[in-house]
Length: 113
Image (cartoon, rainbow, N blue to C red):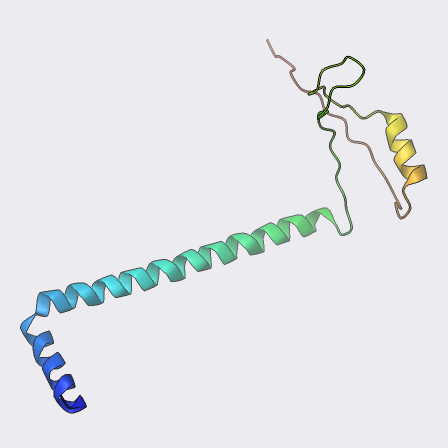
């Protein structure tokens, strides 16, 4: 079959199956639109996150205490680690490159009446 005849048959089939052609074109359009909108939404969220993080400042490291992973001298694993003001002073004196350091105080499990 010649290329011209193939195109002619394709156009004839499209005219005879209008609903199928319309539904196929609608599906392609809807899928393309959905993908473009999802990418745009993701890009917008990414830009907003970067903007929010830059609002804190540059070259900032935030450190939180965690929990122990191993038992030690009879104590169980999973113990809560807490930072003290001495830890802040120790970090300042032992870690090179820290220009300023500031502790943050928080309290959990406070019940209000």
